[in-house]
Length: 184
Ligand SMILES: NC(=O)c1ccc[n+]([C@@H]2O[C@H](COP(=O)([O-])OP(=O)(O)OC[C@H]3O[C@@H](n4cnc5c(N)ncnc54)[C@H](OP(=O)(O)O)[C@@H]3O)[C@@H](O)[C@H]2O)c1
Image (cartoon, rainbow, N blue to C red; front, side, top):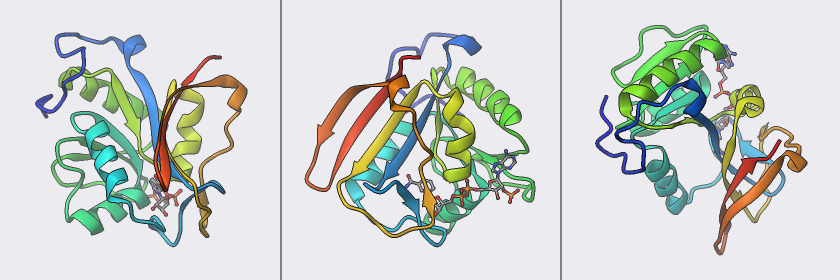
């Protein structure tokens, strides 16, 4: 594990628990869909690049189904990140991934990894079940908001938008890159 790809402030820091933020990162259709039949029902390479650039060098928490979908596509866990995989069925994961059995264990492993990597953010990369579990703990949402609606069977959880403030928006033809910070 290294912080080679991490260029943000904090490389010299030794962030304590309080300083490590939890950010949900998701691509969400206009009707809230995030998944269909175990995968994502759209393909935007600019969004995949955005995900890679944002999460590289950080711990990434994800559910077992999303993890398996990633490995089916890439042939390995996300490179240059630690995948912290929530699962009660998998145990032996390849290098670059670790299995955890609860939200608390995921946080503990991811916080330790963030400290070792010298970064201040843990990303939560889905799917639905995992977004739902971590939304109350998150301080930031990194969303790709698709302009179109999609058919699907997995949704981003309900967000109480009064608790969040939009801090940036990059508008595109098919989707916007948007960030929100928790205000309460
Ligand atoms: N649009 C996006 O940005 C995005 C991002 C990620 C995923 N997705 C999509 O979302 C869908 C997958 O979401 P999903 O909700 O079906 O599955 P998921 O969250 O990826 O995985 C669910 C699995 O995670 C494990 N898990 C979840 N919570 C746990 C807990 N508290 N303790 C222990 N284990 C826990 C369980 O694994 P075990 O069964 O092994 O115990 C559970 O079956 C796919 O369609 C995927 O493509 C979309």
